Length: 131
Image 1: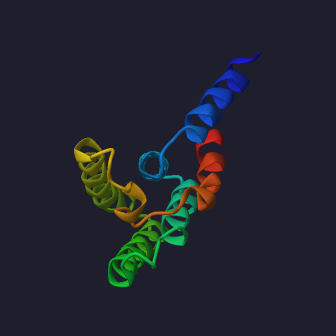
Image 2 (image 1 turned 90 degrees about the horizontal axis):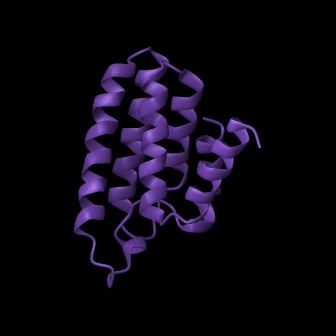
Image 3 (image 1 turned 120 degrees about the vertical axis):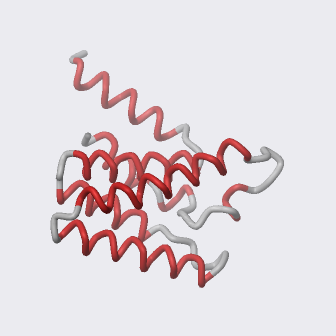
């Protein structure tokens, strides 16, 4: 097995066993890597995934706020403002990481997250495996 195939298999297994919150964090990581590499396509794909998997059924206004923020970030990336987008996404990722640390396993985390249900997230597997 080649190193690339082994890495892809490892990432796929990591994604398949991840919680919705872990998938959200992985998607932020993909966007941050894209920003760091000034990779427009990778960053936009991750931002689109974040935007497209918002759960409006939990709290429409919160989801709409995230939608607008992700759109703003996409607009900045298209202008080449990768550092500003990375700052925004890093703060969001850190906030979600804190939620994960404080998460009580008896709570339903899906209802706390503005991100996607597990059925909607396999696209992130493509983002991470393609890395």
